[in-house]
Length: 354
Image (tube, rainbow, N blue to C red; front, top):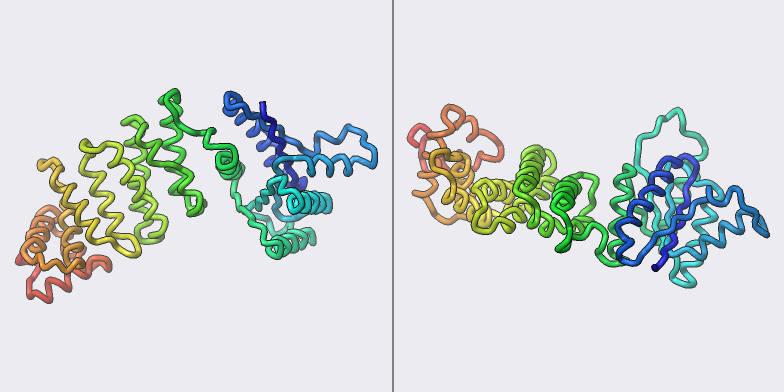
């Protein structure tokens, strides 16, 4: 059994996070046991009742130098001892490339009445890390911290924990599919973390019930962010694409429709791919329940592609007006749809003639 020592340093204000993290290490040990790896957490509390030659701190510092991974958490202050511990770990890493260093800054609300001179230590430490060119990760909750660090363990020791293989039970796969989808569309998730989610893999093996949940999450994200945060909205694209890939020839029309909407609404609209997906959605939908907005938005795509599809654009607008009804002209006046009104004016076509 390979033992990996993880040393965690932080100020007393993060005591709860430190304890939650200790429990997290115990939990992942169960997952890694069959892989022959055991993680051993080391915390300053473990040294409180011990006696060491040269003092307690010297024993503590020796443990830092001998650890495999050094993690530092800081929030509104960096204590004298925590600062010293980082210095020891950093010098040891420079000399031996061990321990691996991870520094996490907690980004959270602070009551202004609790701010005192201690905050200067946090600001100075941040400046120091910049000079050392050492990367600082930000975490906003203990769950966020655990997720981020778990991804690091996967990269270091192999993609074992949270991986899917032939013996992974369906409930576990479904849980991962939902968790990773939520992680993807969370505004706190950085772009560099997204490839680690392996969304295609978990969605492909997820149950149909779970795929529907994942679809709804992607749809809500697309709708709620299409005007306010299109970068975040674009994260729905890999969700819909993964669902289509997982269902192959059986994918329902709304997978293609939602993908088309997202491709159309991203900052640099992909008009041709959006039009292609609208085509597919229209071809396979149930004609007893038409989605009139498919044609409405396909017309916008064709105008932007400059394909010269005059008759097709007229046909799409006429069909969509039939279903949308009285709100059709209101939609033409919306900012994103103004191109339709301009096209109609250019071609001397009144909306009433459609």
